Image (cartoon, rainbow, N blue to C red; front, side, top):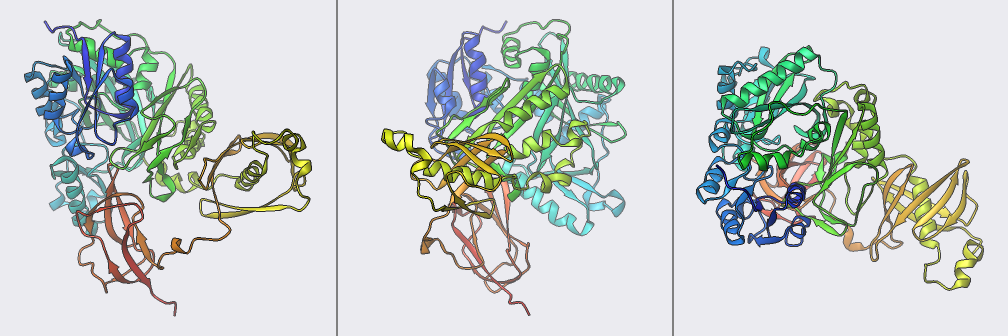
Length: 637
């Protein structure tokens, strides 16, 4: 009989650690956080009863050091360890070490983790259990008839070590790149190939098993909207599945769990073809990022159930009946229009209104660093119908105030309101088709710039009574000029107290401007932090981040034409083969690969010409804005 848990250490960070602590508090458990040096003041540390420092910054020195985490648990008096997801959550050796130290492991048996750790080994087990599979393809013997191919890392997940190959001539390079990325991310460079299913759906089944032979299949989730093979929007139940297919998925998921004597929470993932055929992808032997949509539909707390199962509890024979529909969106600090480039810096404001669940590891004023995943929050809506849940989630995100960093918020809102999504026409190629449309600059940036200029000119709250009462009547009669940029476009605003084409100024204060635009009254919330050129304007027309253009540009801001600057802090993981000063390059050619925030980013030649300088070498740590290389553009003939 397993002893009851009294104190829980979470071997993780960010929103999942905060979420687990919330349940632990509800159950009366003491909580222990671990943290790297950059996370010393992070929300998950502030949310715990006690915290233990893991010296260093990089994951390899901190959250991936199982020995330090176990030492921290014992020193803090914890009697159980929850791994969350990512980091060591699917590391069988760590699970064994936790148990060997006399601590309770909140997860499946190490043997089950081990069995599913290699996707190639997992597929062999699933084939024996009768779970439907795609036939593997030997890359060395692949022909054009096998195309397109999907290369996948045998270990790990999250889209790392994954490549789609549509041309046999590109296969060798893709294999090399996928293997290198997998080795860097997981310490295992094994890669396998299988047919790539065009316009397939990513559908998964949440399972929960106890140590007494009961296995629950907690419905389906659709996770088809993905970027770089990483999920962006998830929902439960997966819409539009015939009952026969849904039952087949449930049966296959339970068979997969029983094949490895599973215990605890896990997810069995499938690829469903356009004609409704399911194929096993992998089993995640941990809690999933998207678990809240299942919790909402079934009215369960999966973390609480994980803890109870670890204590030896017996599950009822069947789970509760599901109700309604839930949709989750992952809010990232990234720029979808710039190759999903992650963002770092201070998150000044994070305010998401509405009747939605927000799981986050940040509050306003926190800093988003370079070492970890750029997800800011998960936002979840639950309603009686899918249409109501989608509408509620889109409305909450559209009304959110998120200041300080570029995010994918506009992309999420556009995705949720896209005709294909609202009609539940889901497949993994959604962003391949619609990314350009979904990342266009929000409309009415000019009106937002006007509101920003009016707010800047408004009297300060501590101005004299005469100045405040005088309002706009005391302003000079000549229009004033301000210039702002947003998304690469410059707006020059000539503003006047009351006279603007199609716009009437109803009121203007430092943080709130009310305008009548083409006969419609709208309020614009304006925020500008002291000593900053960034101005944030939020209104029903959209959210805009504007940069005030200085009247006299700083000459030091100028850089040599053709300079390639590091778009973020990170590590140079590859330099194109044979690349040296004097090499001829073509526009769009990958020159360098930079790894930051768990993702690999290509640095491309900005134009065709000659590489005149190369300052980057493999393994080099670079800061934001560091000069990596210079390309001298060929003159037009």
